[in-house]
Image (cartoon, rainbow over the protein chains, first blue to last red):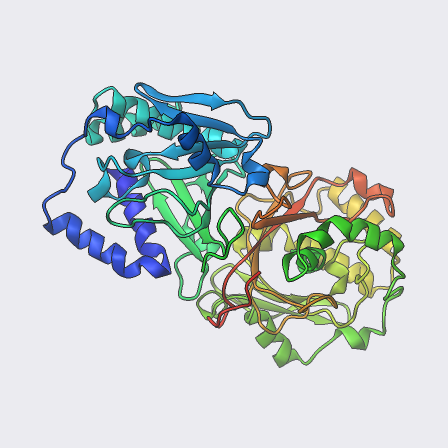
Length: 233
Length: 247
């Protein structure tokens, strides 16, 4: 739930998507949830592993992703499909880690992300654990509770200095609420005041979100090109 | 505070892009120095009110209107406006570039910059120190030695996490190259290079430079300085909200 709240905030924060974000909140509150429960696991999987690897890699320019590790989703969680050598890890995240609340169980969501090494060690591990729990049949609330508990017990690490990720794919599907994310970078910190980066102020190019329970603050900066070098604005 | 490191970076960032990044060290070594010595100090100074306005223009008004503003005098930077949000806005000069940067003494450089509180606390003191030494007439070698001594004696702070600076002023002059300017954010990290963020690779939106030098060959003592990289990400708009040229 918390994760989804953070996502919803992020959606609202992108200038282009303000209206959509607001609409999504209303939708989440008033409309009947379009995806009330988990779909059959097959709907979340990609039959073509090569396609999933390519989609994951599309989150960053090829100059980064060609040497990155790539994870693909299996029936019991993410597994390594390609070993990397530059510390980056690319993955196609699913709805339960990267869509708004209304899309939490939306099986069509495909969100390519490449984490740098620090991001993989401190952010990706949480999403992998979240995925493991989801695929083991836990509810959204149970997963949130488990993640928060693991963070509190330091079974999951705090955000490392320099943790960041790329989300520059022209492809993917963000959900029915926001079909596609703008090309952007994300930077992660232990929970801090978002004002420290001037986030969310009028004219600021920085969007900030804090998750008090998971002790994470995320800053988002839109960039001007997709990973393939084409203009994104 | 990067101000001008940005130079080099900007060379690569705007227009002519990545090729220049790759050629920067060679350029630094081979090109005839366009500014071999410091110009008369007057050429680096500017009208106080204009400097305050330029400094503030580095960030959107929502950030800069409550920021402290410092301005350059004949002996160093001094506070012109006391802020209340922890941010500090200022206008960097050429000598805030890497020590071997060809525009180190370029008197036209005016790099408007607003630093967030961690950067103001942990990066700005280096700028103050460097500026005071430069204005006192010390050579680059003497400046480097004095900064190293200050670091060793812990008179200069360690880099704090979460540093960011806004350089979104339409009025800055960062370099003689290209369009001279472009809006961007900068981040300071204790890294040897930009690899950790995928910087300087083809199509990467992240550029990185060493804070201290283009090539350590010119001033080998800089190799012993704490690793410090400056990362730069271009943004789409100037601080006044108008769109910037695509990078």
